[in-house]
Length: 196
Image (cartoon, rainbow, N blue to C red; front, top):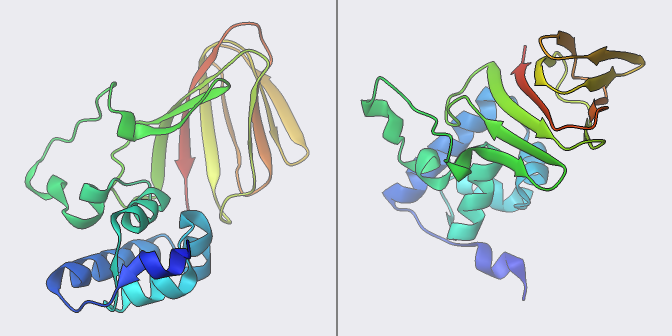
C-alpha cells in the first residue's frame, strides 16, 4: 500500500487549524526543522508542511507519530487538557510515560510530557551488563545522572567515569555518549536533560 495515499485528506476545518498551530508551535519551541521532525516522526516532510499550513487532515496513525516525536500523546497534542489544572501528576503506572521499555532498558519520563521546557526528567533502569548508547543531541545539551542502585560507567566523547549509588555526573550530551551498567544488578538512576 502506498503510505502517501493514506496519510491525509485535504480539509480546511477548525480541527486541522488547531493541529496546524500546535505542530508549528512545538516545532519552533524545540528548534526543529521540518526535515528533523520528519526524521523523528517518520512522517514525510511534504505531509508535515501540508499539516502546518492547515491543508491536510492526517490519519490517527500519522497524528500519533507526530505526537510521539514530541513526547506527547494525541490528547496532549490537540486538546491541551492540562490547561485547567494547577497540579499535574505523573503516575507510576502510566504507560504513556514510558520512553523505552525492553529487556535491556526502561526509561520513564517523570516530567509532564506536554511541557515545553528546557529540562526533562527521567527514571532509567538498565539490566546488568547492558547499556544505553545515544547519538549526540542538539548543541548545548547536557545530562545530569544520579545513581540510586548499581554501578554505572559513563562515557561522553573521550571522557569516562564510574558511578556508584549516590554519585552524580554532569556531562555534555551533544557528544556521542553511553550509560553502561557495569555491575551484576539492575542499574537505577535519575537523569535530567537540559537544553540551551
